[in-house]
Length: 212
Image 1 (cartoon, rainbow, N blue to C red):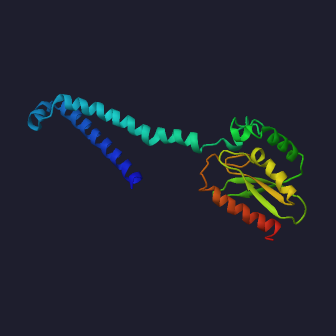
Image 2: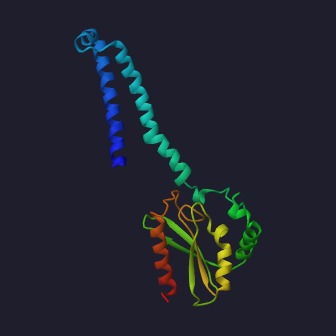
């Protein structure tokens, strides 16, 4: 209710102040503002306040409705994806979860890069090209489909998972989520679109390698 009501309040305030601004401009042009002031009890200070207030409200409204959401989008949802030519898989984030296992992660990345793989591709429901790598342990072995997390990277975050799957006798489909790795897209939707991508990958793997 708040989400739908709040923009209406802002719009109402903007229109109200613009109305007062236009009314004052018209009265000033016709030299009737003094008469209005006497009849309706308005003062020139009030009109000046309306002018300044309308400008401030418009600026604030533009910031709240356009600039702030755009900043939030860039910080939270936007990703350069496959357009980020400067991204280096081995440049691990300076976070505890990476620092604790840094040497292991880097070694596993190198080890998995030596493995043969088949590149897979599907088209998402919104027409994005999504890519994955298929690492076969042996023919007809069970397959794990691996998806990385928020602002993750399949090679960086799941190379250790590939080695673990091989030790368990399983093949791996290593997916580049939308807006990451080789896959298209620039918007991370926190599962709104990714959940559908996961279903598409599961169906694709089942059709290509068999449901068993």
